[in-house]
Length: 211
Image: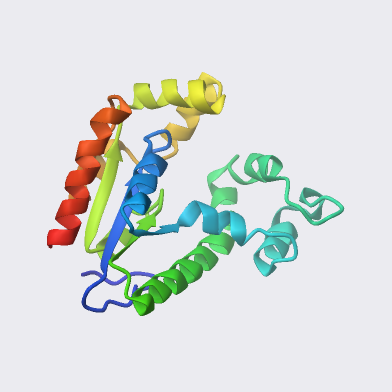
């Protein structure tokens, strides 16, 4: 098992499962099914929202870096405006990541340690950038939810209300699907309807419990 920017403590009995997929892949749907099976979910996106709560030290750093006008009178972040400023260039994105990523990793580590202390069966790290950050090397099992880019564009437009150009731009900023699949121990094909997804997730759950 590799070592990275942080290392999830490993004790006998609890599986560490990394779950990832491109935007619009349905990764959150799979995470929900794993939660229903009793697996603990460590949700990187939710952690990212939590660390930007009004008054948090991470939000203060972000405001110092990108402008205090991002905060309203109650200290609530204008997330859309932050995205416009932070994702407009590679340099700005790296500046934001240098603030938020260490805090996300620290909280994720805390949640894994807590899950292990409880004696949980498995903890799933639901993390969009799992492969990009090399965190899949710290997992016992890496799962990639795979969907054709054109289908992801269609879903993003239909379900999230993005315009097509924005959907394509967001997909293009992520690593390519082939690189993500190459890092996977399990690839879940989510190109079809949800009833085709369930048997694959059931097989994943059985594999995780058997290993």
